[in-house]
Image 1 (cartoon, one colour):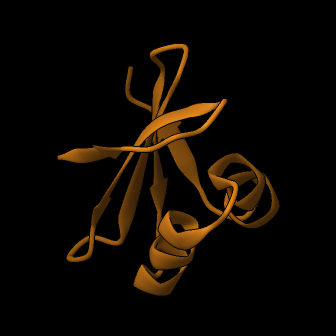
Image 2 (cartoon, rainbow, N blue to C red; image 1 turned 60 degrees about the horizontal axis):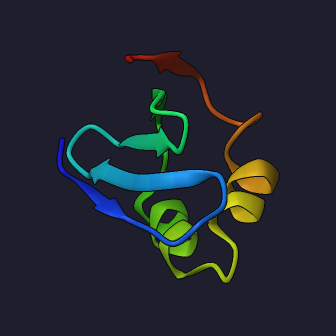
Length: 70
């Protein structure tokens, strides 16, 4: 999945696959997580957020099933 670099103190890049509703987050420490069942609207709000890390923590981190892929 292609990820887009973002300017964040915690997140390096964000990717999204609308066909599978998988959100992929690459953190600045190099770890990569996939979050499942994420609506396209949530991905868009994350990309548009003034703080990607804050939006992630408040709206994604504890709300979606995930797995570490790297």
